[in-house]
Length: 65
Image (cartoon, rainbow, N blue to C red; front, side, top):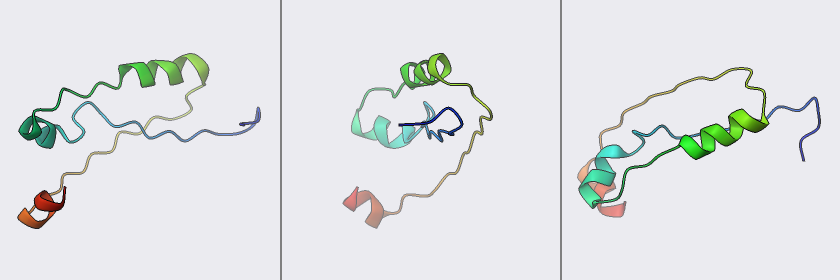
């Protein structure tokens, strides 16, 4: 439950989220359109912040992924 004066902080991955890994694994493209639209329709957006960070996936991390 979220009261009238409450704030919802929602983290929605961008369409490029894990793109390289999805391509290597043959997984379909990620789309966030439905989630973004649902938030827009039901909430007043106070602030939207785009955050991008790239990490190198070494062999160890690749094996355990």
